[in-house]
Image (cartoon, helix red, strand yellow):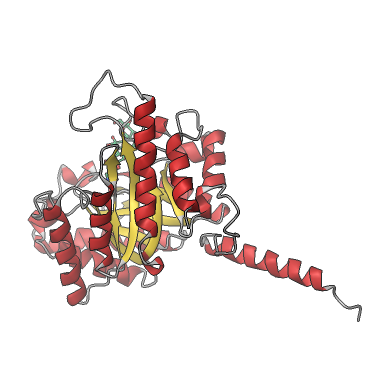
Length: 360
Ligand code: G3I
């Protein structure tokens, strides 16, 4: 039998490794990049690097799709997998948007993170307007929805979920919402148990904002995570949204991430952006000056440096809340929160991330 050259065997082995990583959606980075090589894309991070995306832009905007494929290896639907987008009646669902995001992720070897099963916002009108019932009826509504959605998207390749989003107020109290008011505080336990029953392999996250600026919220969330773990509730990770701004000190970022690390849960910076304008009292005349561009670069660099300081086994990844400034949720105000500008050009913010990724 003609001997097969060693180089051919090596080539085949590399091809199999790459194809396997693509099919698993795992970050292609495997530590093989020589330290001397410059980082040429966000997805070369030593953890998955993603963004919140919309199906329309993925399929109808070639520049957007090009940047997503070149830079990212994890996707979150910005809105496509929310209850108001999916639930159209009791047991009636429109999977279109979520399926398109999941399809794009599968076609491009990317991880797909589900956002979000239970939230106080984005509630479908069909039952907000006329659903009523006792606690058991609300529990049935919640568990039926979670079971149907997690079951559907498991088959679409979703491997992790924001199960509950934003259950706490900034002062550390439980947020009053339809779930808390009609089921009680244990709606969170029920949601995680139901999601786990529907997909035992999925990584299940609690997701919230403000752990970097409110110590009361940070303590309340971490105490509840510990209590849930103590009750044997299946929770695997915590999402820190990190909607920060150009004035957010690095020590606030570190305080939030260190508090999360004590839980020994996977840590997802799940909605990263760096606002330039004041989101509570926006200045309608604000312009994106060179000074603000440098401050934004520093904030992004600090955040990625703080994240890289975490134990690597806790690093679930970083997800930007959007790809480019024109898509940003803050867009109604003059703001430029993302690493790519409205024309998909890399900003100094992008350079800040790369510098933090290159730092050994
Ligand atoms: O799809 C409808 C469209 O048919 C309609 O014409 C239009 C005007 O009413 O509304 C469209 O839905 C909007 C949706 O975004 C899609 O664009 C909703 O009104 C709007 O409320 C929704 O805003 C999203 C918001 O969550 C509420 O779901 C933002 O894009 C999204 O960036 C924001 O993301 C949240 C995270 O999920 C949780 N963390 C905070 C973050 C920022 O608020």
